[in-house]
Image 1 (cartoon, rainbow, N blue to C red):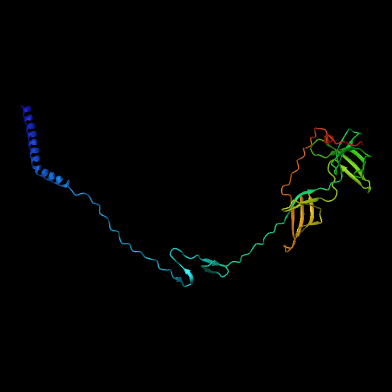
Image 2 (image 1 turned 135 degrees about the vertical axis):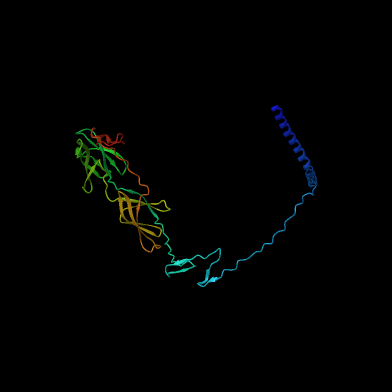
Length: 308
């Protein structure tokens, strides 16, 4: 019985809900009809026509000319172009104009017009360049610097083309002082030649060439292929320019030249050097463990030689 009563209650509640929903729906029917009328009338509208906009009136203004300041007519402060202000250290005042400065004109540099090509050594006409043979029978190897020929000779050899006579020739081994090493011996060949005209004796050695007289500077004028070979205290001219050669040095190669010309207010002196000096090849270091090889330095092939 209790179950039937509960079912009746649920059924009654559902029936009441259904009746309430039907009543609410009936009450909303007028509103729905009004909405249908509004939606149907809103769909029928005129086509969109764009409307142009009138341009707005813009007024323009012109900046008035900036007046000059009380400091002067040039002191004008415009909005976008303020003046450039300078300070004059001489007058200790500010101004809008650059202070005047003294313009120093650089003198036009006149080219020296000369360059050093080389320094030539005035070598003696006979040189001792080596030796051949054994102990007790050495022969000296001599060079005729005039012709470039080499020949073998011993004491008593005459060289009529050079006006010289080989009076003495010898080869010696000399001890070279050396610290913290074994004794080193150096073999040196020497010769004494006599000038047949003057009787003067000249000492020659295979270790260095004998230089007689002063070195000679080989100079070239700018823009010319002509060479000038000049010793110290000599002069020469190129056009209206005169060059006086002072000191000529062989090591390092340099020459002092003084230039005079009508276009120069005073003489100009300059020391000329070689632009690209050629370095001499380094001599190999001596090896104390090996015997002296000086004799092997003699030329292997000789031009036709006269008999000693």
